[in-house]
Length: 56
Image (cartoon, rainbow, N blue to C red; front, side, top):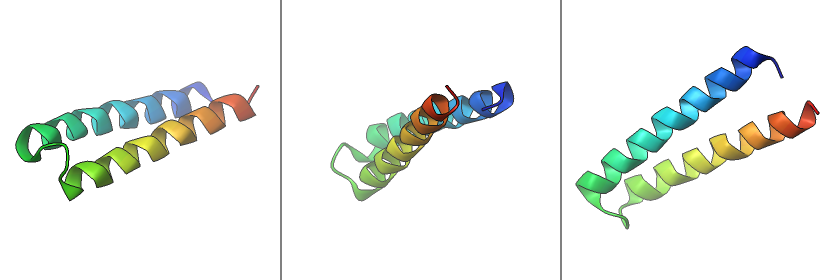
């Protein structure tokens, strides 16, 4: 993995975390939007780990 891919994925993760916090503030923890956003964040985190460890 190149350094710029790592920076890009980490930035997407940072943005998704901010989005998740915003959704929780407005809709609460049990809203469908929160669950969907949380799953998207999980996907990004898993992708980052997969790419990180596959390049070792």
